[in-house]
Length: 392
Image (tube, rainbow, N blue to C red; front, top):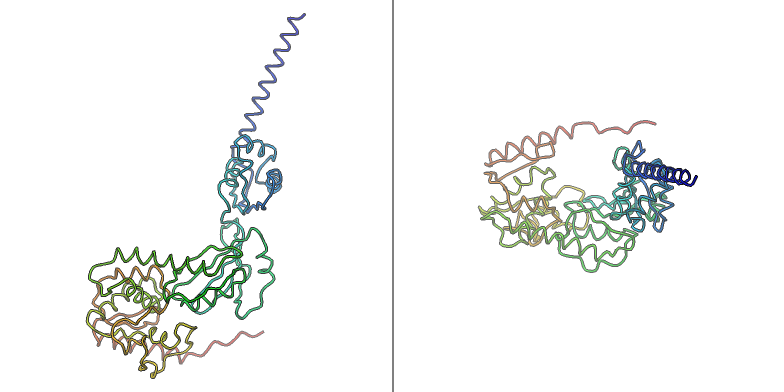
């Protein structure tokens, strides 16, 4: 009898062990295998959220099949306490194991919403956008100019969202004054900028900020970045350039930046100015004259007058020899690189060609022919009727 009882108990014990092993193997497959998610989602982890709440949220949104397995697996791997708040892009069929790793690995992803304070040459606006998980592209929610527009309620609500990200994007060709004025209007930032830094010393880039970021510290970061770019590219510059210092190269880069909006033309434009400096020819570039009129404080908004082209200012390169005393804008890395490593060309002249780019010429006769073509294009455009507003 006792032998039978012992035999049955042993059999039951083995069955239980087999069942437990099977259950563990099943759970491991559930945890490490492909998840049930059919389409990408943007999953939000609030600051201070518990792992249990996150597990339930993931199960509700269909990212995991079982919240309990998710918690047990995370606990077994020792990652329960590593949960980090933020917004996470979870791709289809992502395993529980990979989701745990994503949510505990290192902070916020690029999913969710962001507010971008964009500082451009002619405008400075604010864009609220959010990522569409399906297309992984940002969708614009609202855009406005804080200098002239009322603040949209969507923006006001967004800045109080603890998961929102903020950035300041500085475009190539802005002036230091324009940047300073735009930063003053960013309502989530604090502190005074102080004295304006020298012209041209702020690097165009997209900078991460947060609520309460200090304006002066951001400007210092912009200056530091531009200094590193200039020093690195100066060290790798071509031989025989007509610039004695990195500061002179920065001046030239700012002129190149303002002369063309076509990326592929930067090097050729730089070569024209290098050729002029080498031959002792005046630079004769309109953007420097404009800077002498505006001092970088805003956009001229009209054509130059003959009196301004002849007027004596330190920046009028139709009058002065060589480079002006300061940059005329904040040049980007590409313009600095083009200035310090321009191609070798025979060109001395260039003029707009009607396509947004320029026609380059080696001789004055070629240049005059290009100018005549451009004036014909301008005349034809002037004869075209203005577009009429659509009727209601």
